[in-house]
Length: 274
Image (cartoon, rainbow, N blue to C red; front, side, top):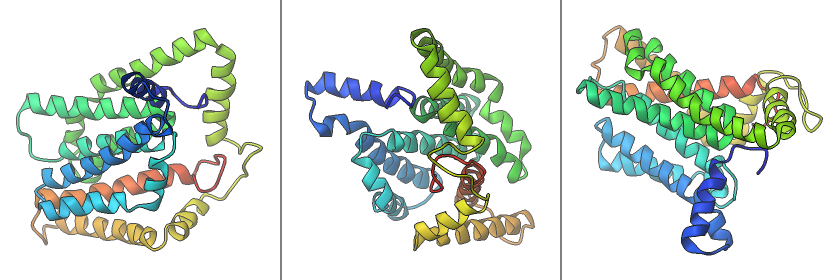
């Protein structure tokens, strides 16, 4: 839609050009690829952290059995494409928790992380900030602040902002009023400031309650899992249990869930379920 950045439309245009078809499935192809790609990223991440093929397959199957994911995978909307890029950024940030292999490999993982963030921003805008917050907060929460440098933020941030800035500049030159009124005010300022006429102001905790109730039965388990992951991390810090590469992953997932929940809970937005 014209209220969102253009990456979904760009990929959809390529699909139409390649197939020569305007069939609804072709127009929804970016969403389908995003959903399948997210499953692939999750499976790859589990394997990268030393998990078995059984657990890697289970991660992909659980994602593909998520009702909301399946529903959005067959809609011509940017949500699943954004999910793919944000999940990829999450995965590459997690890989940078593993022991350093060699400097050149670190640079490629950092570049992949920032590329995922930039693509997410070009898909659906400000939610890409979540990946930046996660990528920079994660090393601090596990007591390894020096690992922030492995993400190369001084190089990555400008490279991440540049494509978005160029698109905004081109859009401004094409229709400055639309950029100012729709993209910046309605889609950004009104979502994180006062509620729009379509929505209503809500207390900060309502998003948490909605998440736990709407996503029954797995929603509360995610919140409980976040608590358990944090407790396991405390045990690792106290060295009461041995640390393995895979032991970092649940805590990283917990940090990610909490970053998302805190961000959307303090945003008035258009609807409470955001």
